[in-house]
Image (cartoon, rainbow, N blue to C red; front, side, top):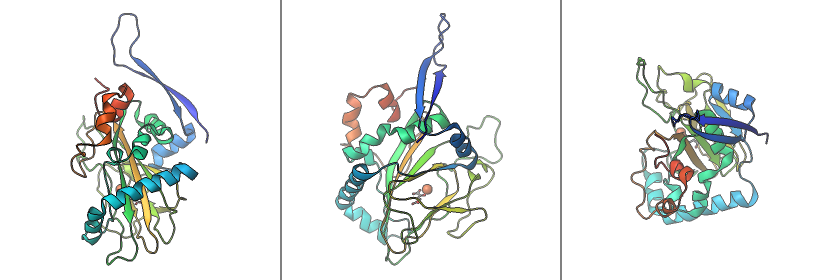
Length: 278
Ligand SMILES: O=C(O)CCC(=O)C(=O)O
Ligand SMILES: [Fe+2]
């Protein structure tokens, strides 16, 4: 994987010696050309983010969680929505997930796209199962549905980078993910309320352990899971000053991140949404 270095100075300090702020050096896990394409198309495919033991650990941790939350899973599958089971707050529930807090292959790209001051919007999973009454798939959607039309002059356009990390191969049995390249820049319309094909969409398939990074407002949908269980993690980043995901209710009170925060450094606190900016 080709990398390059990126320097930032955050203009957060006024000081008579001419020094303006804190300096960051980011080892970006992508080339400048890949970042340009990502900015324009709204997606970037990353094969092999996790391999071997690392992939197994994630699968095992998700399986443990699935067993613990079997009741929520059964309700989700029986429910009307058809999205499958979406466990949330994963970093609070298993050390294996908390270790993804500084997962550089995605964090460094988030910082290259949004600046050094980013936080986790969340880590959740989506598990879909074949052979249920209702096919499990998602309609077209985007993740930051807060854009005003027309755009006011001082409107803050929301940015987010979602890393869709697949723990199973995407294929005809599990279901691909479809995206509409460039649609994250369409600020004057919402996604159609449909599961069907739309003009310009492309289907993406990666092998287990690979990921598809998307701008949170890229139009996308998960195709139906037909013949084999399909497991995905979503590791999301936003600027530090954006609120975290409203979905999934409150954080578990005895969650792992509470204890972790007691000894966390500035960067870790910022990633977990505690300060880190002025
Ligand atoms: O499962 C997928 O490939 C996409 C799922 C998704 O878009 C979501 O959970 O927000
Ligand atoms: Fe989504």
